[in-house]
Image 1 (cartoon, one colour):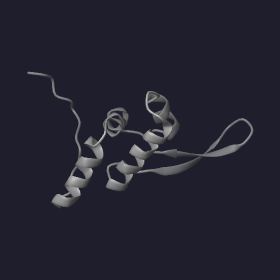
Image 2 (cartoon, rainbow, N blue to C red; image 1 turned 90 degrees about the vertical axis):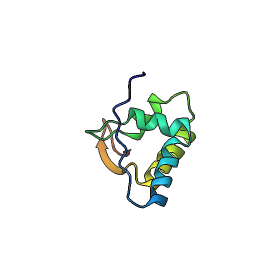
Image 3 (cartoon, rainbow, N blue to C red; image 1 turned 120 degrees about the vertical axis):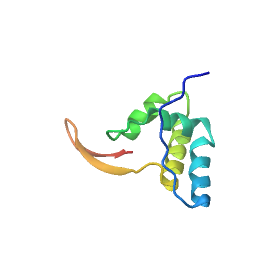
Image 4 (cartoon, rainbow, N blue to C red; image 1 turned 90 degrees about the horizontal axis):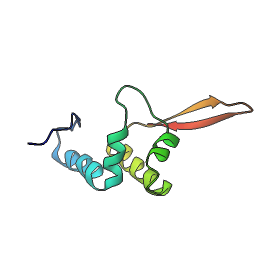
Length: 93
């Protein structure tokens, strides 16, 4: 028997919402890989996700992130970060 992955995917009680979440996670390899690299205890920035998934295009990764956010699997937000010369807004999940 193979070792099981220790991942938990909370599902809503309504079956149509469950279907939407499961489809958004397992619909494509990108969505599944996004879920695999997501930390549980802290946010991760969009730039980091794109860098970790270099074998996929930026557009594909962002589409996967948007699908997961719309299904309610991930939360997203914006944060202002100060760099050397200026402040920039970065997106986190």
